[in-house]
Image 1: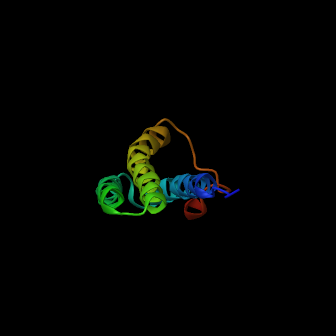
Image 2: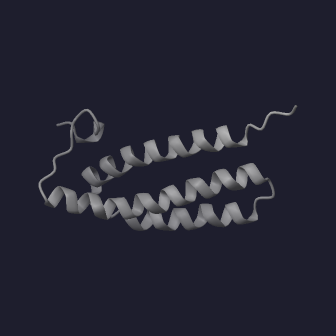
Length: 100
């Protein structure tokens, strides 16, 4: 019986990119406001293009997951702006960059 590791690998990549994306959105918004949103969108398109042309299925899937996470991080930058304007403060325990 051959074990299939692809699902576990993709799950870990998904977990890691979402976790890092959450931290990056809060930190980048604290430093630069909504300015990083466009680079997130552009980077996501670049990574998605790489996912389309990569011959290895697992690597292509990992790039696709990363690209969609980067795209969603760009959306979340704008949503973070709305949350901050609504009065939500960043908790120091969840935003290292927000410590003063």
